[in-house]
Length: 441
Image 1 (cartoon, rainbow, N blue to C red):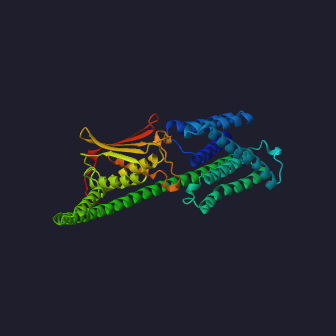
Image 2: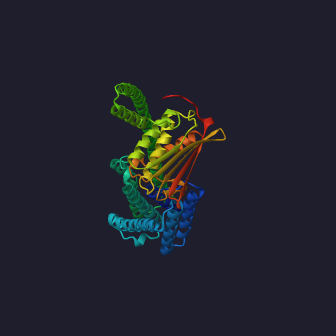
Image 3: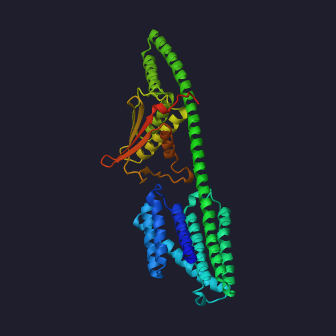
């Protein structure tokens, strides 16, 4: 019974290693009952097949189960599944073979005479799984280079001390067990201790992974907050500039009208025509009022200028909709990210078009709809859009910011890609009752 429990822990550790490997190398879908159940089923099936003592069947089960996990839990395509299954299979076989020869070399023994020694068998299995975990873990970290600034080499080396010390201790244990007459009671406790040693490795790395992910989420939240604050300060400066600009234009136009009057009195039609043209130019270059909301207007004006420079057609209909229920920072973060994403997609399309629309629904909701030309359907995972940016830690912060603000106002986000027209549409619904007018930040 003790032997069976030990092997249960051993296979549990094996699938824990596979879980960590896939979490670090593949984009995980949302955690579902299937996700957790499939790992549990794979563990139980592998554990059950091990009692048949048929190595080929055990290996076939490993390949099939790992492939199913990669495909069903992580949405990996066939080629990706085959690659990772091959890698994990090589890691497992390589570590098992290495441990057999390493133990024989270190302890200066032949393995065959101890094939029925329970302590020896359990220790060998634990040693191979520990080494398998180390190889798979560090291989996954090497593949996931963009988190290198959050995980330094010294930290990873410090973590490796736990399984390495376990491997050394187990070799000492094996040597003592095969060179001494060990009673059945002692054998039982040795097996229990070996299983607990394996469990301690699981706990250490599980706690580290949870701490690391919490740190990453906290860092992303801090980056998101800093970006929103910087954007709000930027638009406040733009508002001040626009106010100064309006005053300057107003004064210049008064001077031009005075010059026109003097030119008329002096019968100088060329001067009149020139000053009239100048007044028209100033009218064209003045800040456009789209909605009456100062932050909405300054953001749209900013991106209207960008669209003009990028030869993108921007059409808006945001009249008659009050955004007073939202804070200035939330308005800035939401519209800034929406229009930035729309421009990034439209500038790479053939039509280069963007439509921005606000309207009220049932007096309680505000609907914000963006449509932009997009020649390729956005990447998605389980209904969520995946960012195509490659800049490590800021990956997808804009999309996360949009979802956070929508959730704050008890709203909803929906998107649709129309392949026949090459258009992408995002619809955001915000509940006005969940917002509080707070004025300028």
